[in-house]
Image (tube, rainbow, N blue to C red; front, side):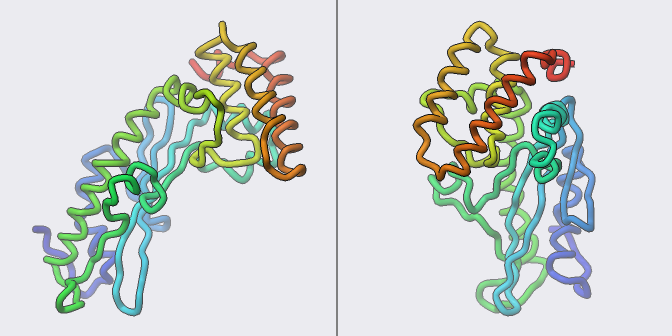
Length: 236
């Protein structure tokens, strides 16, 4: 058990406990964001701790993001206005809504207080920290490992039949990234992929305005791919 400063808030005491674990994994702590961040070969991985409060009772939960600078550079060239809204993350998710966690019905947040006394002490906060780290190891670390290879992202985004992936965001990002990665890692089937995205947009049931945005992203991406060497950007 890690002894914490009882004069600190429960959230600060939690950070005192979990910091050593995340630092050992190569993360650095950004206090202003309550976020642990690490830079890997082709990406940045970030884990943020959020707190839910009911009266004086505090629990913690996790969100996480992956940023691929190469993909965001391409997206900025294709749609600079939308890129400004997503420049901190390429993929993002949270424990509450993560499908694998929901399927297993595992906890999405971790109480920092003792359930009997409703008070905070090192026992209750250490227990919450242990459970939080277990949630990270079960769901977030495998997520990071899976998407460390952009080929896996290409396969997931372009899985047939094409469907929306919530962790990639709206406004045509999936179309852009799917086509860019398809051109990079599965060039021999790229023309077929283009046809599939064309049908995906045509058959989509979203409102007309959103559908037009998808069409615009589709056409802008194809235009970009004709004039740019994406392999040089993605694989460098």
